[in-house]
Image (cartoon, rainbow over all chains, first blue to last red; front, side, top):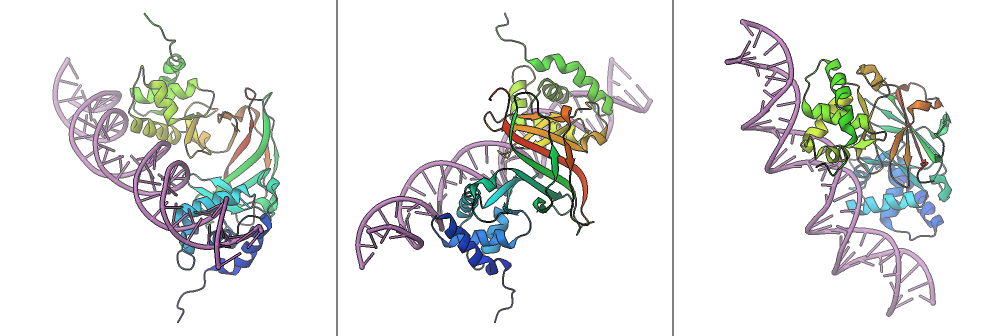
Length: 153
Length: 153
DNA sequence: GTCTCCATGCTACTCAGTTGCAACTGCCAC
DNA sequence: GTGGCAGTTGCAACTGAGTAGCATGGAGAC
């Protein structure tokens, strides 16, 4: 008898598998499971969240979660955000498949000061017009909006 | 005989003292010294940098440095930035004196990926035009530009 | 099926930041 | 100037995110 709902990430396992195959790197169970977690989450996810989601069906060592998340960033599949609580949070890049260039450019996020959750704003890319001092060259622009999300308003 | 140069922050002690008096809170040596350090620094300063600057003339316990820096943020005198290395860095607010509202609004910073230093861009406030999803209310916008600073270019 | 090399899991570690508590001190009232 | 007290500081111990080293395991090539 199954008393608990299936975790949402299980429905993303095949997508995750395909994305990892596309990189040409090794296909392993922890990589598929961690990526499926990110795919299933609409919000920025910490390593602890990932480990928590996996604990029932694909228990993965916490160090491995760290390494897989870093690997996903290196592959350009996801990117990471430094939160106010000194915890890295991870999100799938809008262009899910692995083009490494996707890791660079604009990132825009919204952090709710009430519930602490972080959302990606990349669907509505903000216009930013920055004038830098002489000699400063920009590579990448991160935008973080703090406020109150729809659920907490 | 004085073999070493006077640390730069010593010239800011009186300004720091005045700013702390203006808050109406207690005037203590660690508060004056830490604030003088921030005033003397054009870049974002970590608690370790502050403790290092003070070690010769105003040695302050590291826990006290943490507490004073947090107090300065609460007073609206400075603000803090979460860096890529999970270390808080602190900067004086452009409107140095203590209006608490100064802590809210726009913050714009530039982080050099070569030397790791963070600069404040508030002299040239960038234009940001963000469209948020329905129900999301913004309080504050942080902008972080990554790139290469003038010295490293 | 075998072999090789990369990924994983485990343990131990580092380090930024926090907590608890006793001692100290700035400031106000007298 | 003195006394009292609340807020601040310093110290030691702790927490928790992230990292390093190393033996083992397993994916993929042959």
